[in-house]
Image: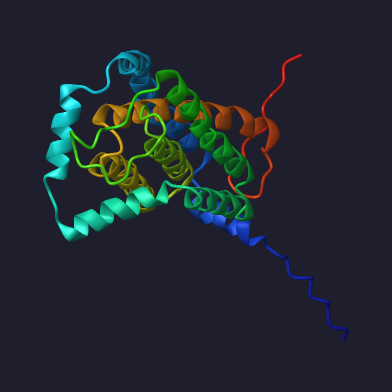
Length: 254
C-alpha cells in the first residue's frame, strides 16, 4: 500500500509569533493611546507663557533655590550617576543610541513605529529654534557650581527635550502595544526614571536652571503628543499590514 506524502511544514514568521504572544489587541491599543495623551496635551499649554517670561528673566528665585538644594548633596555614587545620565544626551552618543533603537524596531517588524520614532526625534530641531528665539543665558559660575560652561542658550534643555520625546515615545509604544501588564509597567517605570534623572542631572551639573528643565518637559510633551498623533494617523493608512502589530486599514470615503 502506497504511503501518503506528508504535507510540507508551514513556516511561521517568528515576528508573527511575537505579535500573537506579546502584542495587545487593536481595541486595547487604541484605548491606551487616548489615555496616554491626556497629560501631554494639558501640560503643553503652559509652555508658551514660560518661554515668554524666560526671554526676559535670566533666572527665577526658585531656580537658584532648587539648584543649590540639588547641589548640596555630594555623594560619589550620585555624582557619577548624574554625570553618566547627562553623558547619554551629548553628541555623538545620543545619535548612535537613537539610530540603534530605530533599527531594532524596524528589524522586529514594527516598521511604522520605527519611522514614527524619527518624527519624535525631530523635536530636538524645534528645541533648537526655541533656544535661538528665547536666548536665555545658562547658570553662571558665580551663582552655582557649573561643571563646564556651554555656549548655547539655556532654555529649553536639549538633553531633557530629547529624553522626553524619545523615551516618552518608547513608553507610549510599550504601554499601547504590549500585552503583559508587568512588562508594560516595567517599561513605563524605566523610561520615566530616565526622563526624570535627565532633568535632575542637568540641574546638578549647573548647566540648566530648573525652569529650563521644566520648559523642556513641557515642549517635549507637546512634541510627543504631536508624534503620537502622526503615528496613529499614519499607521492604518500606510502600514496596516506590517509583520507585527498591524492595524485595520483606514476606510476611505468617496
